[in-house]
Image (cartoon, rainbow, N blue to C red):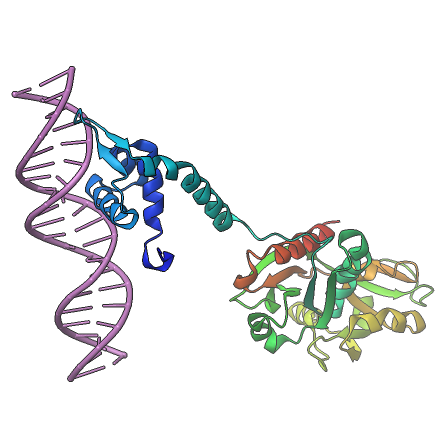
Length: 303
DNA sequence: TCCCGGACGGTTTTGATTTG
DNA sequence: CAAATCAAAACCGTCCGGGA
């Protein structure tokens, strides 16, 4: 019995071409090999099948297929077609029926602004097999956790994206100033003096800092504001602002969510915003489920 | 870990044969 | 005789296993 392990299966591809062409030279052309190469392959095939397969015609010109060869043609061709389909088959992901759990790391701004949209839309976007866990992004370990596959996707600004990761821009964000409705300051547009005189709540995602992004901008202007509170979570701030006379400088999309309870103002100075990115390990680049997640987030981000 | 040698499968070159 | 065609010979690069 012939053991497939013992033979070079590529020979069967050549045999397919040989049988189709009934001509070594043309088969070689089709296979992108030279004629002698295919000639030796034919010799090996004759050995394996114990049959001449192609017989030089009596006329001396051209070859005729042996009976065995004629029998082989059809099933061999079909088998190769099937094999080709097996190899070509791209894994796919159907969010309605497939099971997959994702872990998304993000700070609570990104989670609130973009993540919550995904949470709300999930029943419409995917079946019950798709589950998503949101975890806090703790900066230093992100690269290794992505690398290890503990986290599927990281949502963060450019400085949070590890250089070794693939990344996709989700949206540009700028900052606005937020105060409670009925704040004693009134609702006039902010000027720099007023801004600096107010009591500020700073969100320091790394924790504990009283000197943030905005303070660096003010430094450059030779000004200073009073940061009286520093918290690590964005989501604490709206509730706090609603109950006090503190103000805070927050990402615009995040602030917009509380427009009913809070008043929103432009910054009284030019300040750089940031760009939110999704980042993932190169390994996940072609994973269809991962592609679905990325595309879904990108679509939600541009809504 | 490095190096050597052989197996393997390819190419180029050459030869043999047949035909129009 | 030129063109077409298959196959043998010579050669070459790559891979892999075994020994230092």
